[in-house]
Amino acid sequence: MMSDTILVFNAGSSSIKFALFETYDRGDPRLFCKGLLDEDQDEPRCVVKDAGGHVVLEIHCTQSEAADGGLFGYVLDWVEGQGKALIAIGHRIVHGGSHFTYPVRVSLEVIEALDGLTPLAPLHQPRCLTPIRKISSLRPNLPQIACFDTAFHHGLKPPVSRFALPRSLEEIGIRRYGFHGLSYEYVASRLAGLSPSLAAARTVVAHLGNGASLCAMQNGRSVDTTMGLTALDGVVMGTRCGAIDPGVLLYLQQAMQMSAADIERLLYRESGLLGVSGISHDVRTLLASTDCRAAEALDLFAFSIARQISTMANSLGGMDCLVFTGGIGEHASAVRAAVCVRLRWLGVELDGKANELSRTRISSKNSRIDIRIIPADEEIVIARHCSTLVAGA
Image (tube, rainbow, N blue to C red):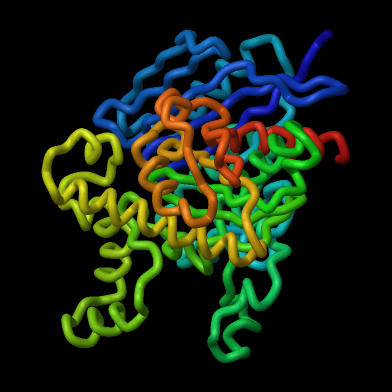
């Protein structure tokens, strides 16, 4: 059976992941290959691996070629040379604001509107829009579809969505949006696939990576989440501070004469695990360190996650299931253990061996809470949305 393909880009702060999916008349899109674009290196490169993890393409280029969209051109040429029709390209967009609550086909007007949201996601939004702009210049007639990390949470209502600020500010869009929605949407689909009872359970999902947040969900819906207007709020992150007394920001501005740009850099790039440890933002580096500051940073990380899990459980009226996802959530057994030991009062109890082996289910037989690891797959969610939109065009 002849298949079409959908190419998905997932832009991070320093590199861009992509995945190519085959689509058929029926069934889920099927992964064909995955790749990585490193544009910010001294020697920008593109690496493509097949579904089995074997390298099938590696390209290096100059920085000037990369700036002109060279790596994207190489990827498109290679994809189009596989003998399958490329029917759409999907993109993860971090902030959709109050207007973009569903995936949309990209236009110049959409790009301009999303660019206007950059102050709400200064670290991420420009990176998300870069592939769209470069591909638009290379393949202007190829459909591109934007999928939003905020969309999964668009049903949040007061009091969850509301800040205690004058209503006039809420009316212009200053509210809690939430992020990592594509990851949470995938977890919701996996829970539904495992069993109806799991899908209906009061579940807290911990998406733990360099950026980290939690989501309280039930019946496939977001009930509460830790991030707010921006991706700064909630738990401690790699270089971001998480929840902070707003008076600290006033003090930095007024007493220390820091500019808005200085404070933005401090909160987004110099805080979190990096700021507290003074060593690294990378959990793997901190776990391997014997420096007491590394241990203190990790302790604060686990404390903030456990505290926010308790908050999410409150929003759900209890907790039946705890899911870890994201790079740290999936691979750092020590972090999972440090979080769960703080939640014993909730009935959380790990199976130590299962946790060390990062098995799918890591709760002990005596645990009142079902504890699971579900690897993140934002790309398949984007591919599904693209397939649906293209089919309905």
